[in-house]
Picture 1 (cartoon, rainbow, N blue to C red):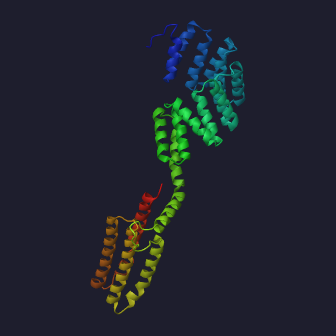
Picture 2: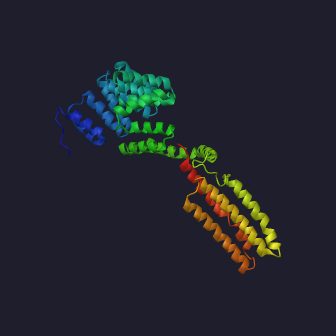
Picture 3: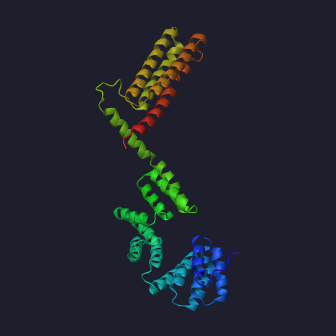
Length: 372
């Protein structure tokens, strides 16, 4: 059983327990203290706070009213009442309690931060910014005021002022989860996804129960997928610039790569028109030899052109040519040994998978070579 703290230390003990998220133990200390000091206003206020942190809102409201019954000028009790009434779905009573707290202490940054937060929820961005700045005028490093100030500037798209506000927030509170959450939001707006993820992970490390950080992580991942069309357009532009750029070695290109679908359509036309004559021709073996040589020559030229332009690595080029040659050999063997049973079908498959593979390799290589 935890020993009861001395008279001079009970407040520190309660506040320490609340700081480490142990409101149940804080409540026990407070109730024992109130047995001997039932008219101590601050003990009732702390009891209301401990109950509020346990989400026991009606009991917390009763403790706050008990403090006000003993001292009608207890501004901290009005402050807690504003939070409680807001959680209980009573916005009018919440605003009235906060107004009374600010009347008693108009310069209290904690009260001004709550007022700014309420205004922020009402989408009154400029008023929320003004309330946060009034609090910062009395305490330039107040965490809640800085957080609400940043949020209000972000909603108003005041990017220059937002940069300064984020710098102040990070300098004053580098170990605050909300700091990294807001930095992650700004990094996401600037499409700096690696930095966004780093800030979200730090926010979750500091506060594993922060649902806002998890939601931002989902938004960041979805945003990358939403940007894919824009990224594809950038890659196409980079490909065009690379194709038009002069050869640094002063050599003429082997072939200027056309779009993949252009070569695929051209080769598909050759394959489709070559099938019926192959099946009907009495001299199919010579015809097939010339036909297969034509397709292989076109494929070699196309692959060589992409390799020369830097879209293919040597091993990728070798894999494509070997794959094409292997399929062509199977088609030839079908013609010679199986009397054309599968020759036409295999011939039509000679370059189709190779060029689909080439398109994937080209896109991935172009993405790596795209300028930042």
